Image (cartoon, rainbow, N blue to C red; front, side, top):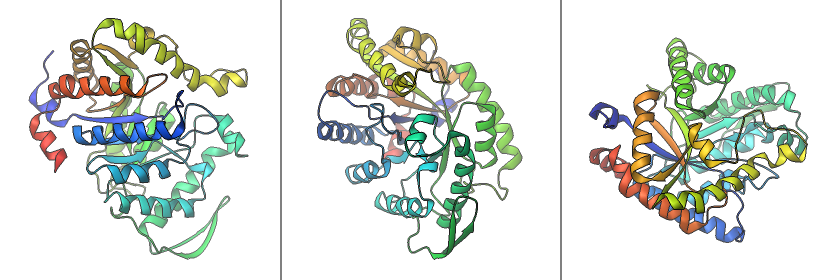
Length: 360
């Protein structure tokens, strides 16, 4: 399938990363990720999104701001951001300062993903009730936006109080770096759209298209209003996340990618299983099944080119966020997959002019 020039001109690729624990040491894990970040930067990916998780092998960057500060120093063009900051776990005044520091350290490349947290167990370890997390999130977000945009901060709410605090730091991007939100339900879609936030979602192509269409309708009704968190963005980004492994041949899928995906499944379900329950979102340990569910792509470059072409053609989505390093994949396996993607897949979807613009 060959895409039209109009579709290709709008396509962007991003990267999503849990930074899962591997068998090597933490310092090697971090250094390996920074090496991959240099490759993402050179290849012209739009943004690197890092997750925040706690008390689980799923996330070895429980303080994403620290990792992104290191990432800002070894990259030049790629945007950087958490997906997401778990706002119920932060003092918003302190987070405002960290956001301002990161936006300036990265020369205005910060993208702010925010959320309340999908795991009640991670919140509980911090003494936060999942039932209270929505209310805390809403209030914290209000405080953060006010603090990023103003010279002084005053707020009195149920969870936070600040009295005429001088905002000594400010972000480089005005009025604030772009805000992002993860969307999987009608409730989360409305919350993101009414605030004009960029959104990413999971799930099969048909679900992505349905959520995207409803999101655009809701954004059109609220864009430019008093609750718009991204007034500087005329057209919010709609993205989808996928795991990917570009193999040299199909044998690699079974020998390398499939076992690594089982490790990812074990990591993402660990806390749920520890508490003898199951996550609300269905996961599978079977990579072949994940590919059928359209949440992963694994195969040769030719096969993946066909699958991504169908995705862009049928989803009405122009931002695909790919996870290259996941589960039990060793560093070199992830780098080989990325190299094949950059040399054999990416050029089929991003024209040379777009890559030149990304490099400027």
